[in-house]
Amino acid sequence: MEALVFTAAFSQVFLLGLNSKILRDDKILAAAITSWLITISQYGMVWAVTNAGLSSTSYILWAGMGGSMGITLSQYAYRLYQRKR
Image (cartoon, rainbow, N blue to C red; front, side, top):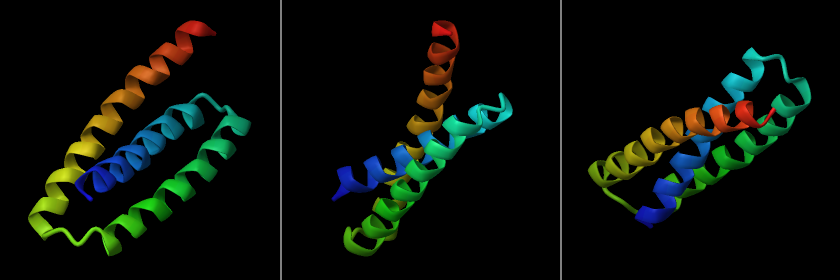
């Protein structure tokens, strides 16, 4: 279940960070698609919270690691996307 919480937090924060960059550059279609993916990842996060059965400390640890890695990698992913354009 720790991996589930980590993955849910990672994907949610990754997509939120990526969407922020996409919106800044006024990429409307990409932002709309990313917003749908954010909705799906947020559902996964809520599901993970209600079903993981982790202690508060364990949940915060795994979600925090996933989120911090997600935001960091979203920055690098966007840089890579920009270089290819």
